[in-house]
Image (cartoon, rainbow, N blue to C red):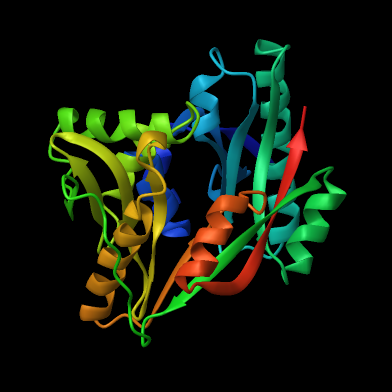
Length: 297
């Protein structure tokens, strides 16, 4: 049997859903997934046996504004029914590498890469990526909080309130996005990713508000039955060092504990000294590390 890789077409989506239901949902509803960056490996009968895609990292949306490393994250899924999954995975990876090279031609002066994350004990995937020309770039600590412990609370400015925040319309999204951009040196999470994330199981956002102005935020969603995330934690610069981040965490952890969770996790860049210091002082402990690998151009 011969195989080849072709471009994605919309009618492929149902078959992709059989191979990987989450990837199907991502392609359908997450605007970071663009058709021109999605590819299918098929046999002589045009049966789809696997799919590979690059999806836009938030750094890609500022490629014309900010000089930084602009990333494309990747995903590859192969049907469980095939006898040669490694061969098909490699064909798709080669096509994704060719695609990032095509994009480099469009942006010759920009630093761009394919970005991959592997758990620190996942030697097989890391070795495969190293063989393909990826390099280890960074460490991302994943930290956990034991929700069977007491949860502390912190005094915040009296004119700031923390409450559940709803992304009910574009105005609410714009308010959040403005604050996220200010807090993250001009590179906020993409709106497409955030809209998609609102559909995650048990998604909830708590934000700190000064009047109508959003000045800090934290988001949580389900990982598995007893385990939820506490991610996307930020406070805009003028409101830092006022316990807002800690009380946002406390509010979220109390909610998770009341709903039967026993563990909450978050991740942050291994070079983010202030964030790591904050989370450790709060009571988070190191859980494991993600190794960030890049195929850079």
